[in-house]
Length: 254
Image (cartoon, rainbow, N blue to C red):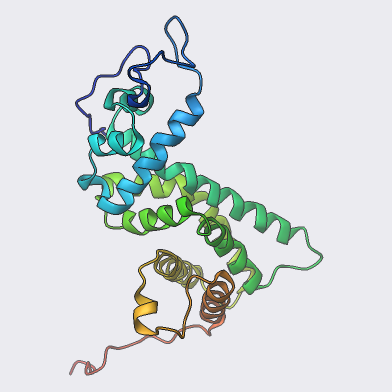
């Protein structure tokens, strides 16, 4: 997959942050190589880029805007990430991998129990890492970015989704298949996909529910949201094998 190159050159040594102009640079080595404080600067850039990508999408975000928000130079972004595409990948995988890892840790803990885990507990293990991340400002921004990823071009979105989530999602599908022996593998994957769609919408702060039911529903309450979505998803997972459906008004052909 080709990378989208930005116009800023990749420097041999890290350029000076815009916040450091006009005074002696601190935390830098005398010779070539990465500056000290790499982690802080990288996180500063990633946090700024995450907000820009979540608000404007991949195409609408420029490295100039990211640099201005992060208070660094574009050349510094290129030094660390190479291109806008490289920056986008780092932004998404930083939190996406954390969610996947925490899901696997929760599932492994369930499997160490004395009995096979029930469906509701598997659903909780899948949903809770994303919900916990949503409790932070950066996590809420990532939830919006993740929901937006499904509207990004395939050459950008497919690889990232696969790299972050494929392995863990397949393991959860297998765990659900064990807990739901009456379902086919096809049914399990359909229900997994519908669960993912439900949580992406519910966790992405669209504020639609506050508009529909003001003063009735509070999607900002983590206990309320996990209770509602886990009940909904678990009931769907436990539903009987579906009958073939026919759209209303469509009869059998003659």
